[in-house]
Length: 368
Image (tube, rainbow, N blue to C red; front, side):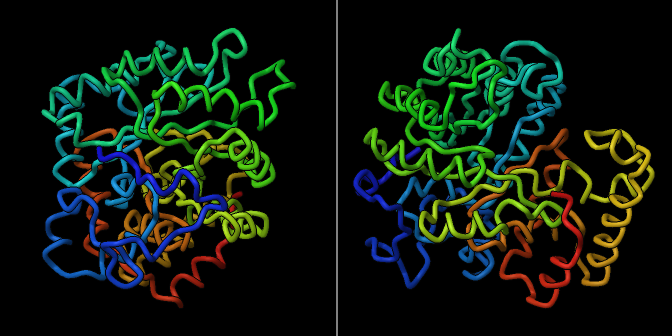
């Protein structure tokens, strides 16, 4: 992918720019035209360019508002299923992939070290995806720190991925047990070594609190790091406490870093599959547990609102997350090509949500 713009290195405090050459009005022309869904490019400007705001940061990362994640999905697929999924992602216009070293200790399903990364490398090759035409975002965990430093962890991940560097690496917030000395500033210092070694083109923070993010940004600036390329935060119709909190509003006002919304479908709750009688999936335990009546009621109310407004529930959930002014992209998982094609169908309806519909959605109780 194209290298990030040089002017960002001295751009503290971080600001989105509308003065960079090549912009038309308040929005940039597509940085990578091939990354746009062909129908959206041909049909006009409002649908997709609403989300292509003029960030002075790695524009190729956000030239399409959907990215494909890998958590608890691709390691379960065989080669045929995986190749079909990646072919469908490429055909839909997805050019950014989120992949990490998932294990039983950090949310993986198989417990096999690097299974997700190995699957990504294999499926990408089988699908014929040009490695230099996609952006790969990775994650740094501290589940083995201080025994294994992030620098060594990233080297192992890149080897399994068959790549020399990440386009973007997120510093995850999960604290390892027994390492109370790992402050946000110390964690950023470890990440700085990864960037300085040339193993990551850009860096970001994943699932951090607003307070810790503020400390991390201060540490990054003192270490001479450029501002982060992105914050990845869970955000959805029924999980709004992150970006909609007073703390995050204030932080983003001072540091309007592009946000990648994770879990925009609330781990499948907003797809409607559980209400239809299906109980298999990440949230099956919650859906069928005692005391889950409140959750089922909220999801039922959401489904009714979507139907009344003439929206597919999956598409409305993705559009809601993308309608947040700080969100530049969403990342979702898919276990088969048909599911991915259905999800990416949202690009035909993207644009500012009806204010009345958005207000009604925000009256739904938030689960977090």
